[in-house]
Image (cartoon, rainbow, N blue to C red; front, top):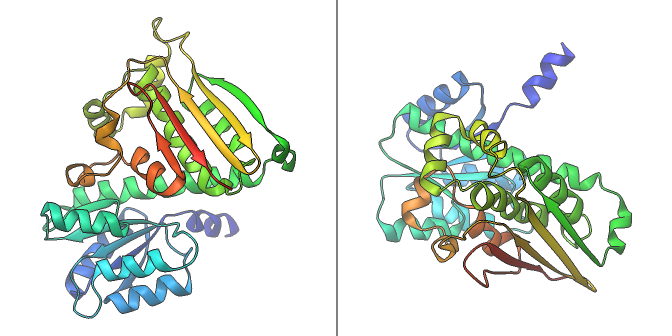
Length: 304
């Protein structure tokens, strides 16, 4: 019985916010059939009350854009204004798909979008992506919290890494030395994974989209790591510290990419299953983010 309770506790938790009762029931039914635990809110006011009372209660918030009492944008603005970051991934469901409407939602904090009407398949794909992001960040933060306090004395270091696993482990270790490790570990992990997967292994954006949709992304990464042309490739992380300020330089052996296109999450990519790491690193996880060259080097700063 205890094992069953523990397993249930690990299921992703979704807050479904929808003012139409039939749609609310249908959304919850589709998600619960796939194993998600759901809580329903039939208004923006009710959603805000649930979030403000228990900000860590949900992994994903599926938020209706247009509601009569408090719309989804206002809910997001209130979330953004509260102290401390929201740990849940927010998906905005809306019939408003103009660039201006999407940009408004992105600025308010919605990094995933579903355009009404949508299929059950589209719903499950985007909720699955958002839940994986949330659970991945939470696992990283737990790793960071377990690191030794002696890392607070670290002033400079250089790390070389080849695989996504090594990138995650080093990011969790290094983040512990910073003033806000739970925030920093997310940004470091995203940038270091980019260095391995897209820099050294040459996985382009469109190809990554296809592999994720097919559920074969990790398999392809593992395959490419064993190819002769990639076996000796390494990315590097250089850490420099001055007082409570940190500077991270991440380099890979790839040819670079058009990094200018990824500093902001544009409306076109708001509907994709990936492609948010650089924008979130720049806006949320670091105090400064710069690409000084062709894209195979990025410099991120954390100010204490």
